[in-house]
Structure formats: C-alpha cells, structure tokens
Length: 302
Image (cartoon, rainbow, N blue to C red; front, side):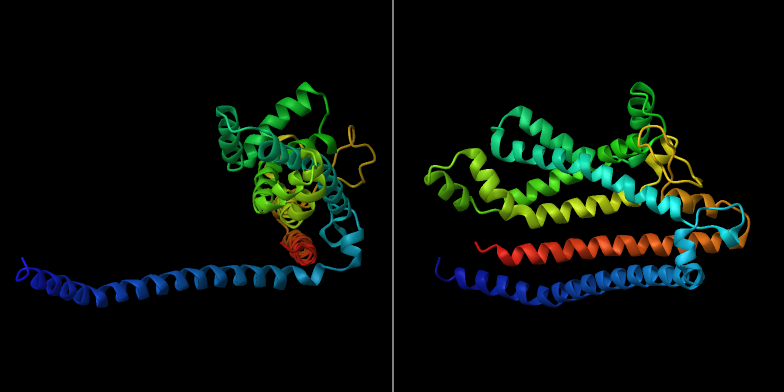
C-alpha cells in the first residue's frame, strides 16, 4: 500500500499542473469576453445618447418647455405632456408606496411561513416580469370600462400602480431583510410590541433601501408608454388636465411617439429634444435615489 500511494499522488499533481495553463487561459478569455461586451454596450449607449443630444439639444429652451404642442413643429412644446407626466407620477406614488410598503411589512413581519405566503411571494416575483402592455389591457378593462374612470389621469395612475407595485414590494422586502435580526430581538426584549418595532426600528433602518426601490420604480413608470396607449391616453393635448377623473391627459413618452410618427424632420427634432428632457428628469430621479440612500445610510449605525 505504501509503495502504490506516492505514484497516485504524483500523477494527480501532474494532471493538476498540466491543467493549470488551460484553466488560466479560459479565465482570461472569459474576462476579455465580459469586458468586450461591456465596452460594446457602453459604446452603443454613448453613440445613441450623442446622436439624440446632437440632434435635439438645439430645441431645448424655455419656450419649448413652457409651450403647448402645436400643429406646426416650430411652435410645438411639451408643457402639457411634461405636466401630465408629473401629475401621473405623483398619483402613482400616492397609490403604490403605501400599498407596496404595507404589503412588504405584512409578508416579512406579520405573515407566518405557510403555503399561502410562498404562493403570494412567488406570484409577486412573477408579476414583476410581466410586460407592461398586459397591465395596460387590464387597466382598460378594469379602470376605464368597469369603473368608468374614462381615459383620465386616475385611470393611468392606477394602471401604472399595477405595473410598479410588484417592484416596490420586492424592493421593500429586500430592505427589511437587510435589517439585522438583533435589532428586532433587542426591541422585543425591551417590551416593544410588533407594531412599535416595525414603526420605530425597522422602517427607519430600512428607509434608504425602500426609498431607492420606490424612486427607481417610479423612474420606470415615467418612461412607460404601452400601458397608457392601451387605456386610451392622448398623444396630443393642448391644455392642462384640471380633473383627474374626466379630463384627457398626455405624457412625455406618448408625445415623443406622436412626433416621431410625423413625416416632417422638424417634429423629429422636437421628439429628440423631448427625449433629452425626459432623460434629464430620469437622471435627476436616479441621482435623488443615490443621494437619499447615502444621506440616510450615514445616520444608521448597526
């Protein structure tokens, strides 16, 4: 036995040494492939953004932002669609944040492990990946027709709430799970109730993650066009909505869609300028998410 063991050890060591260059080559090749994919994606994005800014930046001015859409490209603006987008995002946040955060708190802190909880959790994760046009068709049947909300801001906000609600729930759950269990245990040990623990300890500690998830979800809602087209939102309005139940409305993505469908190049330039404004709003929202996360994270010490 003692004479046969060393050759086996030497053979395995030799095989390992012979395979090491191949493994190193495969690792380097994989790293190069990943870096190439990253460079290609970034270069494509930079080229697209450069083309859009180069074509549309000349139209971005105060008159363009404060003017209503017009049948003449030279006088067309984005006032109604920009205000409509802000109204819509505000209403969507009003509906989605309490529902999403409340559902996450219930599933994480109150609901005991069971088949129902597993079923609900699985379906919430699946709903986050459903195409937004499906929610648009659901909103058309439920909010526009069944509830008689017409093609209004309220119907649009409720439809977008369906789109981003699973995202808000999942982000809030992840933020709550990130809070150490010792905080819960210490709170209960001091005699706090479950509600006192949630309100006084868990929500403040998980607030950075919740805010980040909510703002990113609202950023997605801001760029949605398909579900709003499905419920019949207008692609052109020359007035501001005064009633969230009866007045028609338009948003920036639909205004951009309308202008790109026109044959005149001047409208295409206006669409590029509207894209610049929309990207600016989205970048500001993402920057706000990063800032709030950093600001609140500094106050939390675990």
